[in-house]
Length: 150
Image 1 (cartoon, helix red, strand yellow):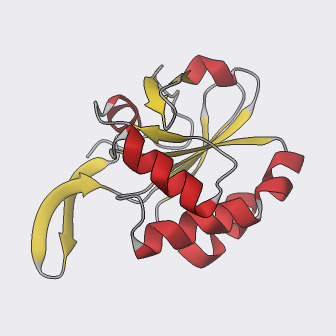
Image 2 (cartoon, helix red, strand yellow):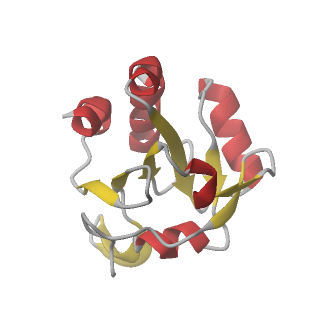
C-alpha cells in the first residue's frame, strides 16, 4: 500500500457520486477538502463515522471544508446509504478504484483472523492547491470530526 502522506500532491481523479455525477479533484481547486475512505456503506462503523461527519457538517462547512465520502460500493448502494442517513455531502461510488488508487488506501487487511485486500479507513485533509495537509489513519468513528478539526 502506497498511501499519500502530508506534503504529497493528490493525483487528479474522477469518479461518479451516488447520483451518477462525475466528480473530479479539480472541482475543488481553491477549496479545502476532506476525503474519507470507508470499507462498506451501511456497515456499523462506517455508518457511525459518516453520521458523525453529517452531524458536524455545518461546523466543517463554516471552517471552509468540502466533504467527500469514498468506498467501492455501487452508485445504488451509495444512494441508499445517503438517503437512509440524510448525508448532505456526496458519496463516491469508486467501483473503478480511481480515487482509492490515487490516495493509495487499498491493501492487505486483517479482520477476525482472516487476511484479505480492501479499503483502509483513512481520512485525508487536502488544501486548496491539492496538497495533503493531514492524514488520519487511526480514525475514531464517534469523534471523527474532532480529529479532522484538531
